[in-house]
Image (cartoon, rainbow, N blue to C red; front, side, top):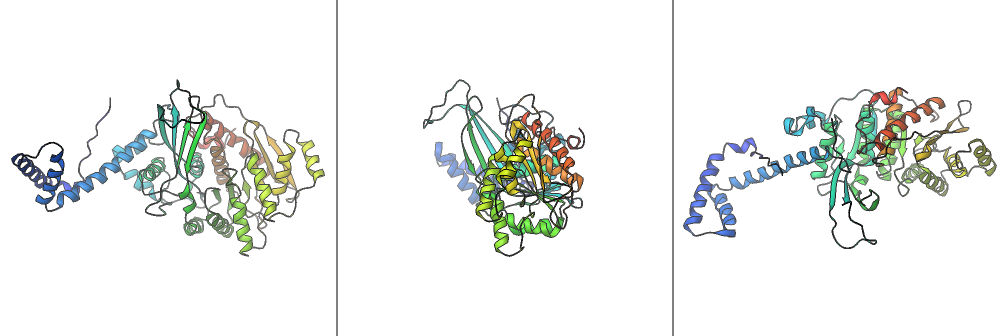
Length: 483
């Protein structure tokens, strides 16, 4: 069964309805008189009505089609909020609540959240938005390896995603006054992203449209009946088109306390964000996103150094949040680009590895290598928890390393977005604490406070692991202010 939704013609064209009806009646009568039948009827009637109304019906029809498309995209976005990527129904959805229902308020909610006044020194997140399209084959089918050139029965779900969007959404749920800078296309998917963020009360004024033919980013994944990823296609080109000029304007106007960057944006955009945040003395956190993209921040720092904007690029980016593989790759490239003079002595690594037996020696080596460049490193270790590297309170040039024990989820439903939720929680905590940056580029935050921030951020990650959504709707400000 289904539902038919009748969408009326826009009001500005409704007053001509009597003229259109008379034209249609005349055209139908002429068709009968001239013996027009079957498949020839529709072209004849449309052409004759346009002639009888002197083109007014064509203009009205175009307006009607556009209005249908607008309402249809709103309905699609609302329906997408009701089911997760694996088909679970959402209840009490914060994505589209009754207060922001599209069909009740039409564009009122979107326009009200398009641009709103922010608190002093907000959180700014700059990164990618995307539509996640998740296909899962029916449970009684076995996929061929390699995949056969055929179609498979199954289910397809769509949701709003993207690393930057996930991070900004999590921080917003956790109480941070969040300004999100991203790029979307002039298409139905772009409308979905915009309305989804507006529906939860986020500011959408800084969603950019890079070009008329730009496509909203899409991540299209095929999963087996057990939920394992079989193959995926990522169309993320638009994320590299986020305007460096707009980034500079947003940072200079809002003077954020914290800026979060993901690795999907261009090297120019990254370097612009870093230099702009340097002027506002904002804390910068970089989320590496993936092994192929994680070195973009190093290329940006190298560009800044070559451009002679600053003599020393150490501690321009204050926090990085890599996993183990990203940490290793960043360490290698930092040495290749001569952003760091040398690796730590083997004796030093061995000594620290003995003190921190739960951490692999390679993690300690790579973290110590990057320490002069990035003074705080929060290394995501999955089921092993996290490792934190930060300056010693007694001597900021001396690193201290510790391991944060993992929290165990009661049930893992969806791993997409768990790391992003953790990063969003870290940013929200830094924002709530109004962390400051010293003249020499160190954060004014004690090691034990960092440990607390990461421990609580793990709770956000767990909640998203236990949710069908990339970012759990259960995230709330109390999560990061209480044990």
